[in-house]
Image 1 (spheres, rainbow, N blue to C red):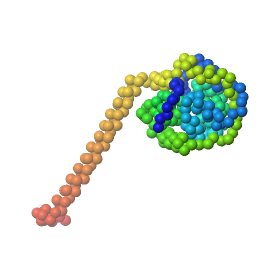
Image 2: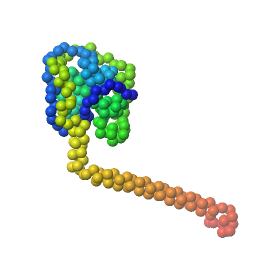
Image 3: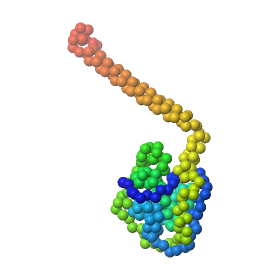
Image 4: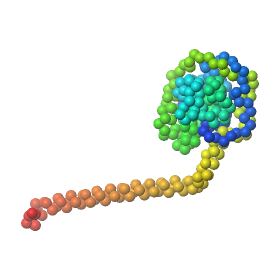
Length: 261
């Protein structure tokens, strides 16, 4: 499934990204206004050109629209944003419904842009990180992620209703500055890549990593070949033994040998 007219944005959700300079205004510079969840979803959808049905499906799957939800991993709010990701998205209070939904929508719009509107890959990245999508060349083989993609897609197709709740959220007088993504000195994607590259370099170089993978693959192949040879040898021994027994106790052989005690 693909969606069109995705606004060009930058970045990924991965936890632990390095800091990005020049964020400009964030989602916290607002005047308080009573707003319903449905209105927030509508504004987020129009702002980031993401189907409202997709945003609501993610919110339903992530937290069942609970603005106070916190996962065991530390994800927060309706769209379950990790703290580091929330900061990079300009969200200062992840438990504020408006900030959280706008931030989560901004993030899924980035994933849709990254994967050319492919909803499945965007959702997989939202759940498991874009690095895992790249590593496995598609939806990672994680049961949680696979179930997540199916569940969100189902909610999106069938439609879900947001709770009839109103929140005193903070909405900005400077809406144009809220979405000034291009002022960032580096994209979230670059920050994420640098973060993981730094960790990788601390452990071993990329060349060493490739040599390790090559050596590990060869060891696995050698072990499988050895097990195969052992199985064939055992099979040959078994066949030889049964053939010997069949010949030894055949009537002709026993007559020649004069019987066997």
